[in-house]
Length: 116
Length: 306
Image 1 (tube, rainbow over the protein chains, first blue to last red):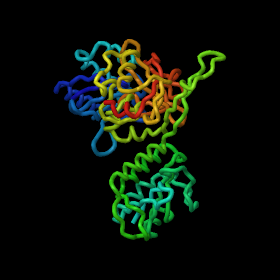
Image 2: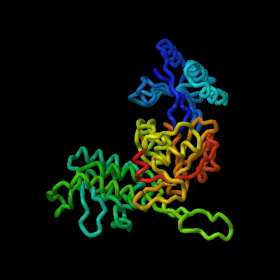
Image 3: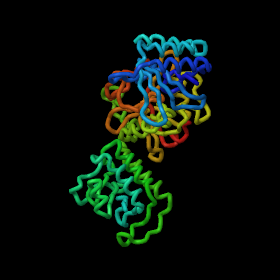
């Protein structure tokens, strides 16, 4: 699995790979989430928007998006599943997995946005 | 049967496309009539007046069952010229162009026809593109009081109707085209980068360097006019994040506002505060706080980007 930091508009977004064990843990963490209620929406616009999880390095369409307290699991058939990410804990944990790979400037740009 | 007639010629009979398979006709009519507001008043027997070139499409059913099932009259008219409402009209017109094989007008309702050259579909697409595009004069403000404006600082540009569905409806188009694709109004599915198409991509993200790369692709600074042969010539704007994080582009739309596409997210006409963008210099641009300037794209530039 590949995680893409959805941050840029013009240049390609930064990415980092997930080790198989981390990918398994991500799956378990998502399985523990409860359905989102209300009209929660992912972050949008210019600047940091969230994280996209891609199934493979050549994929461009995300399998999972994690953004602003909302986790969206896209399925090939049927509507996406919308899950609640309380306190954006999953988003923070997932971003931490890329700390050793991502450019420090990216981590610095995203950090304050996670607290908004 | 469903017959589509392109209302495009002035002197000769208009070409037609017949969908003879009943199931295909039913599916097409269901899809095409999903938004009834796109069609002209069914009580009017004549299409709206329009200019030369593509003005619209007639849809005709030939049995009352099909007409009844979809609650339509025997004839429907989709205006597709400059007078047509913006947005989904162009999508439906594009569907109509692609749906069936085009033929010269038959002598009788069901007379035999020979198919037209496949390039006719391209001709119709070109007509559709130019019909949703409007040329305007982009005039420089006088530099000082009393100074006469020169003809050299008035350029002709083209603005097109805001059509976010083109960019947003297909996930592959959505995720693989960025702000530079949107500004250039050219889908490459490569996340186009300024200068990559001309072989000299930017080496850092500053106004100067991204500008150099975009000019290398064929853009011009504003008021450095392109000839008519380079239409469409959109007016676009470049902004960057201080410190070199990223760049972003906006494009002026026919409706007067500006459209943009933040990376692999949806094309839109509003800013980070949710306000419609009438001035990219004062819009809420998030971290893209440096305004670099205005430029013109052109036909050869958009075909060069990659």
